[in-house]
Length: 391
Image (tube, rainbow, N blue to C red; front, side, top):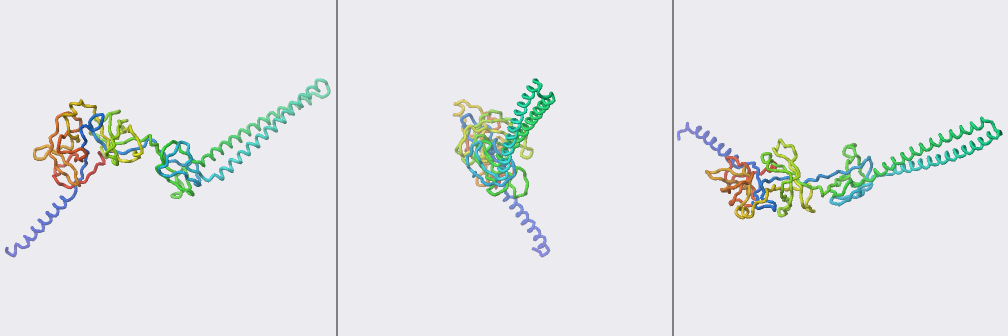
């Protein structure tokens, strides 16, 4: 090669190496995909699954228990996992000042009642004196003025008694208020449930208001009513028309894949998530035990009505969303995720109406993750990264 061609050859070689490096980097970068789980066509006792969605177990009745007043904790009687009954004592505050105020209010009530008794005695004496004065006036032994003075004394004593009675009512009201404040020093469970979080310790200050910065707690613990557990799932808005209220369903916990829980749709929440293009659906669980805990992941299969036994025998395979199907080399295909790779599977969907799903008699097994809306650039063996947040 002539010397004057050496610079040109060097530039061409560098360009080729840069192109090869860019191609290698692009090929090695995983393609972000969304997936759905292939389900058995005969899955569920109520019929076949026509739609699947993922979500979490949530509690409809959950409360962070706090105090009505600000105070220092002297006792915390709960730990995470404890079962508590409605009205059970969970914690106590320092009540020395409240107890002193309660004792003072009780003493005020006793004093007021004693003054009422004294006023009653004075009124009784005044009425007796009035009676005697009236008899003396009738006999002419005293003047009429003395009788009028006796009647005036009775009226004054009646007014005094009424005043003492009202003071006693005020003292009793103060006592009731002191008793309420004293009872606020005891924190009780508002309903029966399980403690899932212990938020404060003995010696810490607790307040119903967020005051004092990081040195003041706003709660003692969080209690969950386990009987109120249900499932919240996000359904792609393109398929929300397949879901109806009271529709049968089946839930499978991510932690216990072999436990199939009968369920049904409670309601479709009438709002959509713009970012994820999903609609929230509430699902009731018809079986509950200790394995169900709040925020555990769950997969819900929405079930179609029962098919005839003959159809169930003839139609075998797995159901996948219709958007999982693509075309490669003029043949229907799906991509299955295995070990971070997209594996191409040629399929022949079965005829029949399965709603938003397609029945694949072979090539895909129940439980396989199939890629939804695979891009045209996706090839057999491509590296993929699964993002199922919206499904």
